[in-house]
Image 1 (cartoon, rainbow, N blue to C red):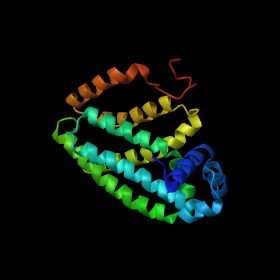
Image 2 (tube, helix red, strand yellow; image 1 turned 90 degrees about the vertical axis):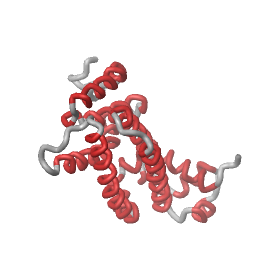
Image 3 (cartoon, helix red, strand yellow; image 1 turned 45 degrees about the vertical axis):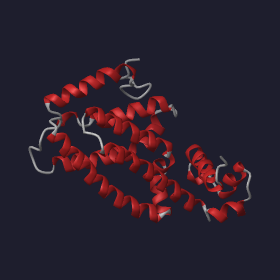
Image 4 (spheres, one colour; image 1 turned 90 degrees about the horizontal axis):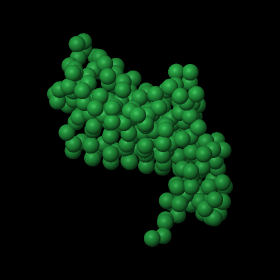
Length: 224
């Protein structure tokens, strides 16, 4: 099946943005790579900002689809691991957005405004998942009001910042980066686990642990 021109544009733009960063990519570099004129490309997307916005919406759509699928499953530790790993994979696919996010939101205010609304929705979704995990016996109830609200904010900040961190400490090795950060994000729930939750967490950690990197490559704390 022939790929539509708009899809070819987005596919090439994504590859270039991920490899070079938003400042080094132009309408001409994208058009030249797929063999069309710059004028033909601007018929579909008038500038790189509109392409960035379209790619941002694709990321939101793909993450939303994963959430819909997960909402049909009973929450447990495996569910938590799988959801986190899948989300990290999707974010890595569109990693330029998070690497250059401040610059992008200054340039494309539609993304900034949409993202603020998205974060509010994410807070409610995570809180609902935590309440289900409490009810299922994996998480401890709050011993003080607001503990989980603060935890949710920490989770969101970590989730939005890990790719920039990976750019500094790793050399683009996807097979190391995604497991490392997805496990790191999941591990932040350890202080909130019940004995049953700790047992389930340890079972998954023991299963996946031998292949995981425990600290940054080359760190003096690394077992290597």
